[in-house]
Amino acid sequence: MTGIFCAIDTPDLAAAEKLAASLQGVVDIKLGLEFFTARGAAGVKKVQAAAGARTKLFLDLKLHDIPNTVAGAARAAVAGCRPDFLTVHASGGREMIRAAVEAAGDTKILAVTVLTSLDANELAAIGQGDDAQAQVLRLARLAVAAGAGGIVCSPREIALLRKELPKDVILVVPGIRPAGAVKGDQKRVMTPAEATAAGADYLVIGRPITQAADPVAAARSMCG
Ligand code: C5P
Image (cartoon, rainbow, N blue to C red; front, side, top):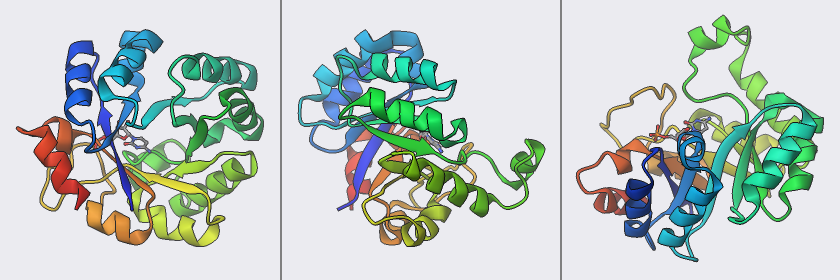
């Protein structure tokens, strides 16, 4: 069954703890750059405690630096909270990914290929406009060869990566919107059912849950 990580994107510790506690047993949680920058590893541990021991934690820091620095950051990030997943940018290269994998221990490293907020115009503007799919596949293969346990990919790339990558590679998919929802800054979106059918292992859903009048009901409705 496809799992769901709720992206708790807030700098507010009390709000994150409250949301994590309420989502216990419904969906797993993802903490990212916004929360980590504001609250650090100590904040992560508090939210993890509020979420309960059975809730999976995904620390989405999208690390990208020289290998030595990424290794140190990965070691510091997983110390204490032992998340299930930690992200790095695949474009940091093989050596950087290998360094993160070694430093993260039991935490699985997921590699981010191309951000789902980038459309063709933006990709062209940063010099990656030739063929987004080819770029995703190249980066995904490179990351897996360097030891990444999974790939963060756009809904549109699930089918391609499922076909081209080894079967045990975990596909984690943001850019999910329930039918008829506001897309916000996400440009390449699918509904939870579509992404599940396409072969995603985990969905990442933020604002459709966190901004809902009743986040727990919204999360339940997406577990379908
Ligand atoms: O609110 P929304 O559902 O758009 O949140 C998506 C989450 O997934 C955010 O936390 C964002 O940082 C993350 N993400 C993404 N695209 C990626 C990787 C992560 O949108 N390629």
